[in-house]
Image (cartoon, rainbow, N blue to C red; front, side, top):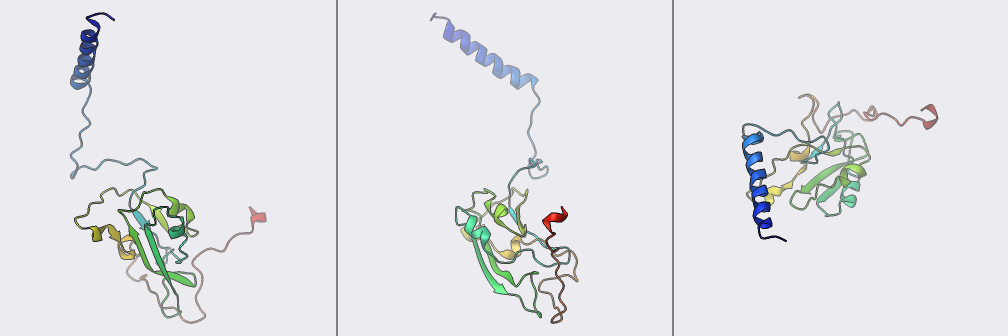
Length: 174
């Protein structure tokens, strides 16, 4: 190893730094005004979805809570009635909470859900000033109803309720 080799390597490093500094475009984004486009597979804040008729897709089965490795999801279910119907099934999630500080955004809840009620969206703006603000209740996670007349809970005449979920097709027909 010669005496001048460290100096030559230092010079090459500085030349590379100057080349990238002077001749490559900057990628600075003015954040609050401009928002960066997220990648297609990005996993952000959770969203609880609804059917087109306004009913919630979540049936309160707690499979998402069982699949969560960090125990961030709490689901408490209750029975639907004909007077108050929240979801097409027999049960609905009366309490649905996600502790976002505990969540590791793995997507296991999304995979475990049989009705595709929960997905990880593309919202990355998650800031809290208090630890209690990091616990998202059902009202904060649920997407808005499609129209004002389709709210949850819905009134249904006894025995007249039709399923909003399509029936499973016979695999032989595929």
